[in-house]
Image (cartoon, rainbow over all chains, first blue to last red; front, side):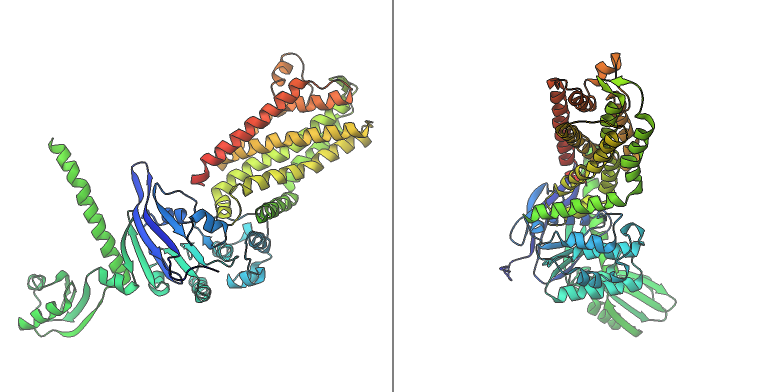
Length: 317
Length: 244
């Protein structure tokens, strides 16, 4: 492998994909570095699948360029640099699992022995079964096997654990970690925030085809700006609490106060300065889910305002 | 080199699937054999040869074309919808590997369909021909299979599994009936038949048997359909490349 260790494995430069007036992907810029495990996080229709399709040379960007291992995506796929599993990928029916895995292995320039693939994907026990007679979770594991039949450098997975039960999902991530430990780069799209939080070193949040946040799970939680604070306080006055510095939202139930703040120190000091003595004080980061919702909601709001303004101008004429 | 090896491996897997498919075997081999055993031995002539000789060429073509066409249109449409074609695009195989493998598999599996009916003609109906005539008849039908393999690709890519079946049936029925694979054409029907490739494939066979000169028009019509359907298949496959 003469692959440079320093250059990005994947690079999107000003990549857009438009379907008529719909901007499925809107000026996306990002680099993936060798050995990273990256989660692509976004609501349905955010442009995750379209981005992965373009990365895998299934679709052409309307504008911009994607490079993978220094060449275009098509050549990277042709040279076996990438193993991929897409939600929309299907399997050949009427053959056994082993026959299918053997067949797809034979297409690879650097094949992995079939028995090893079967074991890694956890399908050695169903190798003799016919592909069209498998359950949803089993099918998903066979599709995963097809992504790791070659010695590739990048693995791309679109919602890999859909249709898997909890145990299978855990086993899946355990085998995934082994692949990553060999130095492979992993990019996966997911709906499960927990999965992104636990498995990824880096999260890309996308919404409406644009990259909203890019960082470690902790960075993303911070990016949402707010901290979560809770305490007990008798006779708490909600109107007063809302005037505290940095406050985003306040919720009270009896003496229990839960609030979100941009400035947890400032909020707390102001509360103490006002003579209050709250107890059972807890301060923590927002969960990834709340952070994610905050980031995308903010973007949706900004977008709605941007869209309604020209409309209002137009109606004034 | 690796490209070709991969495509051939895929074709091999396709052939293996077909061999396991009872429905496929029934329509490409079982049905032609039964039809031939029941209807071949009639005291009649067609296109200047015995009915048994005409029927041998017609039914061998019927079996071979059924295998290449009926089965492939539905499969291609389903495999496109279910994402198998997309899955293959994620492998180092060349993008045309799927289509090429389907056509190779059709051509390979049409061989037994043709040979078995010709053997029935020879040994059940007692048709005696010089070796080269058998070869010309078999090869003509075999190459004609390519026309239907190409059409199957075009239709399979163009339509969803829900609508593909009636469309495929209609198209095929037109070529079988109006091309005269089941019975010889005469009068107005023959005028219509002369624009189909199926009519001319049968006529080349019967002309060879009757030692009649093969009509150049027939060769031109067959080639025109072949070029037309290959072009159509190429266009449809290209047009669908992004929406697989």
